[in-house]
Image 1 (cartoon, rainbow, N blue to C red):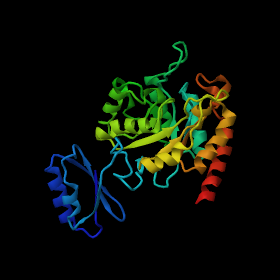
Image 2 (cartoon, rainbow, N blue to C red):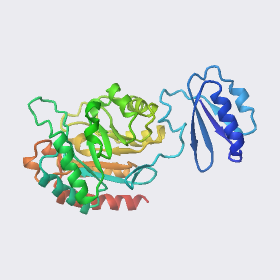
Image 3 (spheres, rainbow, N blue to C red):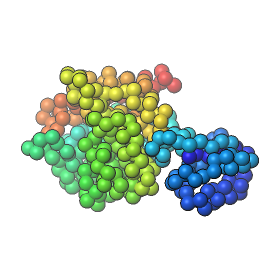
Length: 333
């Protein structure tokens, strides 16, 4: 249930209403926008007298929310959420470019890529230290050593770090990682999500390859219900009848998620397509349809990459793409 408070209501009257609602055994989520204040009532609202609340002179309207996701719901929080990562903003009209290799391999590799993508305008550095792989015989990442190499690259360039966490037991290793990525395979790892709800770090939550938007938002709800409201949603392609690409990039998810939720939405065209030459057109399409950012794989030697070289752009190709994205963004402004 949400209660919309009139713009001219005094803070004292509003606070009295909040305390009274809390007295009904409810938690209250307060969202202060430019034109109105929305009180989100969390808990058992079945016994709440809607007519009584609506009759109060400071209340504009009262509505019941039928969707199961509450904290991530735009009805609870009409204004876009803007997440700040060491000065880099995502959401609310701020566009963020995240780039780097699928996997951290050596210090020379990650530092070279970090310097290259920063020169092209990337805002954050991505790199996998822990790699979930379909085959147990594939490269699984450098783990703790990979995190240390990411820190070196970050110190060299000033770029915030984005890296995937697979188990909450590894969290101590991620102390200096700025954004924790939950991969598609772990989107419904509810124990991990609940623990990340206790962490004061932004969480980049990827949609599972066979999951609905409602399921993605419910996974975000697990994190937010724990107290961590810094969630970034990521569309990275879903499994369909398509047989020429790794997945089907569902760009319709971007405007729909923006309609349903206040959380930032970014797109991963690298994992969606699995083919480097398909990444630029899909990245441009994502920018055109309103995504709040992109996460793109870039490798300085894709042919010899230990992980997903086929979908990785070279630094030169990323530089060309970044310029085209800037032009698309300017055209939409």
